[in-house]
Image 1 (cartoon, one colour):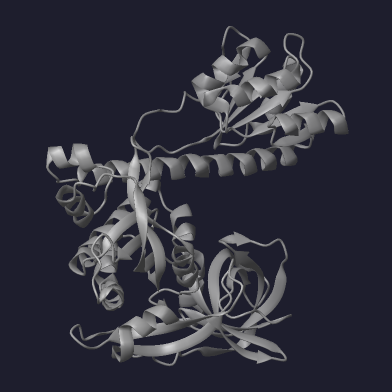
Image 2 (cartoon, one colour):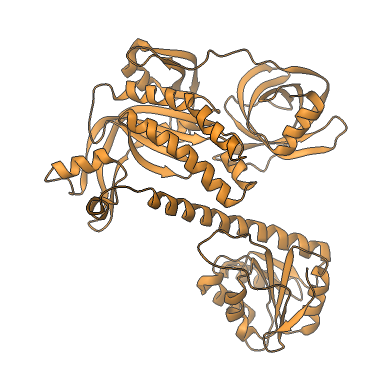
Length: 508
């Protein structure tokens, strides 16, 4: 934290210049705005933060000027007193939440005592936290960092997404007339279908049998949190560029880019007899071309990535969805959801398909594994199949699966882990040990059995109990024993500190 400078008509002070703004991606510092009419409180908080080099502190004594000052400095967290002479504290909370510039900024209210009713009102109006002043210095800093980190992550994700949209626009090469008229569509096949049909622009849809492909970069959320937003965008664009070329080659219709995921339709707007076969062949080539994607990443000094692919075939409603002013060509139905659920069961490099897709493909696919799963939102179990290749006209095959080589550890490594549901961690923490380890997989003993295909967030410790990482992600790929519970896991995201430990300790 820098030396204090007075400003804002001698009723506020700041420690850093105003953060830069603009459409370019920026590095966001922790910026604290304190609103309190008591100068002694402002000075006390300043002293708490003065040694924190990464925190910029601003103080506003006049509650009537708090909104204006917040709009000027763009805080990442606001500390606000609930008792002030000019404006009631709860009213100011309401003003902050109504103001566009501070609507999502974390707000910590300060009070001289613990008052449950006042606390409840503050939370109801949009406050994020409540502290009795003056709290302990370490607690203040911890809460400021916690709330600021979440808000800064939100800002950076939004900037990365906006940069991705801007990048996609620059890559657009269609004729100006077609872009103006049909810019809402993402596929040339859809545009051609609309141009050739008098009813092409009409809203509505029809039910038909379609094959849906969903792809996703496994563990990419964890990777993106460790990289600057511009690098995240570059990795995604690199991946999308290669995959889009393959999808168009197999006459797939790109319905949507969803961050690092792609939703692809085979069978609309043009229905073909071999839609399921082309979808599987497309998926195999997409996995084969991931070496090219990662070669580009390595040349740019980006980490390697891997994708999972899920495919399902079934009846769906397809057509123009939306309004007369804004619409898109898309699909609706439970079979889209099932494709997404199947994809969620994958690990990197894997292709999983439904039983209906397998039936449409016939005997030309190579099945490497099969399993029965219970997808969320479905009443009955679903059989899914891991595909290793396809014969016939395409003759595309992934390398045969090799038995994973794991090192037997003389001294098991302790772990703590949480189970992930829809990419969010449950609160329950379980214990276990890693007793066999490889570069991309491990075998663990746990206190209780873990269902196959469960996603885990793992804290890993060395054999002396020192923490290596809290950000190791994995999926259970096999249950080896029930008593004691033993599982094979495949790592879906390995942070740099864990990679360094594996290399130093085990030469992986």
